Amino acid sequence: YIDLDNLKYINHLFGQDVGDELLKKVADILKNMIALDPAYSIYKIAGDEFIVCQEGDFNLEQITDVAKSFIEAFDRTFFIDNYNLSITASIGISYWDSCTTFPNMVGLDQCENTLETLYKKAEVAMNYVKSTGKNNYKIFDPIMDEDIKYKAALEQELKQALKHEQLVLFYQPKYNLSKDEFDGFEALVRWNHPTKGLVSPSKFISVAEESNLISEIGLWVLKKSCILDRKSTRL
Image 1 (cartoon, rainbow, N blue to C red):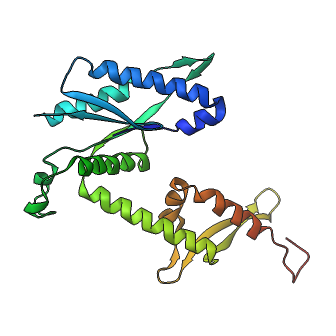
Image 2 (image 1 turned 90 degrees about the vertical axis):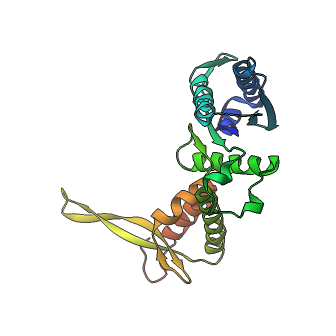
Image 3 (image 1 turned 60 degrees about the vertical axis):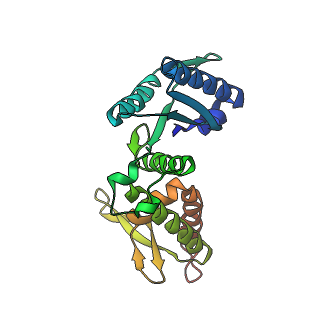
């Protein structure tokens, strides 16, 4: 499962036509790389997402080498409409007998992977790559699925936190050594969870960034920290 990283920013900065031309070039690269092996086939499944399948017996090391070669192939400059563009990709891998690698995780009656199941596993692995830095590949591991579910649940809780005013601000003073006085405060956001208590930003900021909630949180912090204190004339 191949997903191009940050194509939406290219579309935003240079226009949809430039993004479409970049997609065509990427598709050509993928087609040319697998053209000599009839066991491989390639499908475009969404705007910037592709599936590459190998049918029949396989060697896992060879499969990971193919993933590496895809990543390396994108390490170039694409010239489109006088723009010099670059792109990276996140790749997730799944394979037919993956359940035999984790025999204690599933029952024997669940070990036959359908094509849809393999697709979902590869997508989970790809999303794991997205959340851990992009421009890489990973083989599906059931632990990834649990991690994705945890982050999805946390994202929903965070949306409720914004809705129900569970976020709070703490102000850290900034001291000016040359003037020997305090000259400002840094607003630090914390999550006052109804059951978990104060949650550190290290636990939820990354999830907020991945889900685009970070903009909403940033706006909330800006508004909250600039509210005029009715008991004084200072901000």
